Image 1: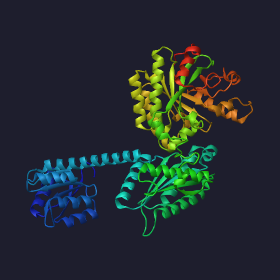
Image 2: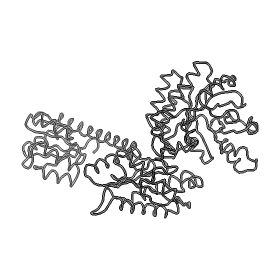
Image 3: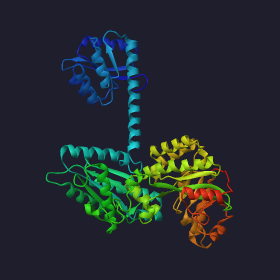
Image 4: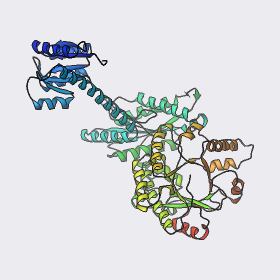
Length: 586
């Protein structure tokens, strides 16, 4: 339709009324409206199918249909076409019902002259267009909020909703369902050797494999990184959930292993799959997912590229998420057994104290085998409680730092490590803002340290860091290796890049060592982009002396002070932290 022409389908059983409407429109705007007239609902539906009009003017009282039934039938046939209804009766209830169903306007016959009727039709068409655009935008926004940007699969949020619905349905119907938890084997070398672009292409290919091996009634999700999940809820006659899940998992493993080339690059990837079945392995979503996850890690421990179905014997295995003697995270969170440990951050001369970094420690470490921080975080991420731990850490660390500030001994800023998984969680951002407000701490006294994420997760992280910047909070990008392109480095809106221990070791290597040249290239790129460069992981005075004077902004490591508890750090501040520089991280 252009500005001067309307293709109108008039569904009206009275020939006289139809001629009056056509004549009024012709006199009001000659040549602007083309009218096709039919006298029954059946004919109207047929005309819509033959040629979709710009607008349908529908009488509610026809020989083969009356009232809202006409509206429902025409809306179904018209599929988004503008619908205006009319009647000779002043029936307000019918009018409201028609509008609720999706009609754009309601007219009473003989109460509109030609110009008024033209305005009603044009306004209805324009209003319908705007409504459809808004609906499309809402659908697009929902899709982006509920789907993984890279693969188009359901994201963790939608997966949780689908899993909850599947468990409820299985419980009501007294039937089985199954979870498959999939983790890729050998995916990191793909990123390391070929870069994130090839890695992302590999994830897209894996997603296609997963979608191809399940039925339309099943659900496939990317939970993050190289972890995927499948919900199996549709089974044939005599088919058990365990049998079908095993077959699907075998096909997943075989087809992923058959991927030999991605974006022209040779790759070698596989998959390990863990399975849990409702109701035998749990009656809640949380229980089923944890058990499927546990089975997946059992598959990895026993050689990778395997399918393992959960069994109760897995509980208590060393390194398993359910080993209460090793990591009873749920109890530790409830009992608030996590505490921030603090390590000083020095200026480029290695002497002046500028900031402090808060690091996660579990008070159960001493009694439970000194579980490393990395293992703690890995298991917390698997059990999907990392955000809860970090929420506690943020509150405690900011509270402690603010107390030191009130006592006049705090350094310039507090650095907090927050995972990308947690940073995209609104609860973490709310906790951070609440802690800042409660303690009255200026935002510029805080720095959030993040690590690189996959391209599909970058948008969520960028949105979170943008919110933080609005409060004055600074951001630092931590790098453990040099596997990052100029474009990727530029996409992180952080004022600082912090090089962790592996890159520090590379900088300390011989000048002819390729590792050193690569590390120095990363520094050159960061400097060109206007980023400050910090070093973390310096272990000795000799290392510090070799790095001081080489253009780094800040230095950190055990050579001056290892991370210690808050009381111990206070003693260190009072004794050795007298040279305090009140600067901010950027």
